[in-house]
Length: 457
Image (cartoon, rainbow, N blue to C red; front, side):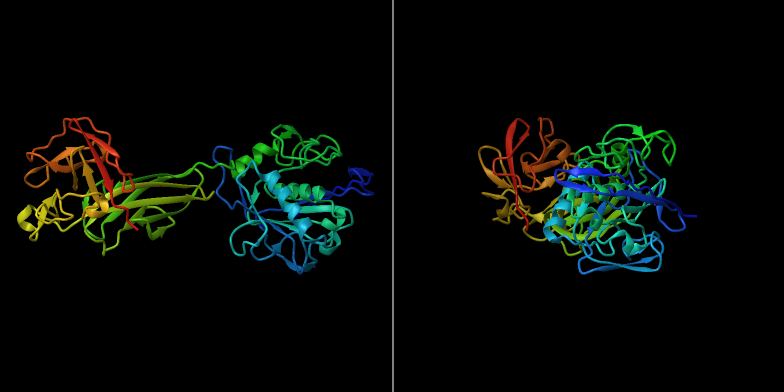
């Protein structure tokens, strides 16, 4: 059953210098239930919900028609109206409308609410209709706005603010939009003059206040959803979160950094986000390969990857559009058990064939000036000379004769001229990235080894 609650102020109230209305308009709400609305429970500030964060301020340019039905902003359906109702466009011009949008954005700025002035179409969104007169949807004179209300968040809600009632007063229109939108998010009227949820006036520009105050229109009463007080700021923070959301935490678990792989290898990632994940994307050498919307986050790399060093990145985007990422490097090469398994001019490093010391320029141990001159994409410098090198696993001692795998700590190691034994005793600070500048240093076995990776495009 729907219960209609209408409260109209009939006294003269000064809205601003030179502006007064014989009947000051106030917003109201109509209680609805799950038979006519998609309602989700109110979350807490630390575990806010994952619904839409878009708020569309709809001026009905050229006029717009709304029909009765299950509340859905994507189809212009609203349980508030009967039959089909056409509303004329916002009557005070584009400049005034832009001021209204700017005002609403300012009020919503503490929260992760994206206020837009273009229709999101079929994308889930909350919609604040700001056009016409209350008579246009069958309501009485003096109603400034109306919204569906429930003790929860009404997804894809449509609320109405009637600018013609305000005579073009931008601040009044703006604050009514803020009140009606918040009704659809589960907020009641309250007795705090500086908050848009109030019927009290005059008290200057309003913002959602971080205070627990009594509910009510003209006198204190219990709140519709329980308790004697409400806090509009904390309530909306609980629904939408802060304007600075926490990005997803991303960790690539397979393959390991600098692991030898074959084209088409599997990429796995652990992704965690409190705000609900929208999608995860695999990039290889900066190029988007594929996108996944749901876990498990398991990708396949392209089967056409060339031999050599490649950048693997997973980027995750949550429902607040915050982005987190993780990046590693892998080495593609033909499998081998030793140099004899590789073609002429190649050497076996950690079970893969690479361009070897007898294949200059570009091969392992060949001179270089930067990563682009090396088949591996990595040019190393120990202070005396610069040579092309290959990533390796220090635990495997998988470099060819005349080279040793020098440890780079958590980043693995690199093949460097030596006696062929693992020389992991030196301190290390990790490998330079693919885009590391010339001179990036790796401290290995008592020497400074600079590594410059080739930039891939």
